[in-house]
Image (cartoon, rainbow, N blue to C red):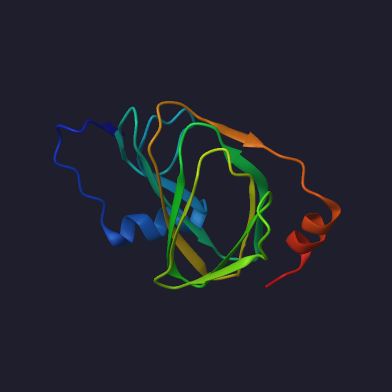
Length: 144
């Protein structure tokens, strides 16, 4: 069920846990195009949600054209490689926060048991998949 920003809206821990048991990524707010298990607040320019990685997961390398991608690590380990920067992959742990600027391609992977909170300010889906180098493909396949 969709709610508006004018509604008082509460999601309880048990609801979130039950939903993420069935589907690892759930949204608390956004202009969602696909159905999901949780109720959420229909917003035009703010996307907030959680990802619960039960197993090692490497997300498809991508960038966001219109907004920064902000991620707070609730538990576990989340690894990020900024693909056009002269940096090594970063390891983020519980309590760490990262903001990846728009148009910055990156690859990410999560250790089994990792939980994150993500925040994006946007008006439309702006995710663009990028082709990783052979080195990044190898890194993505290396379980953490």
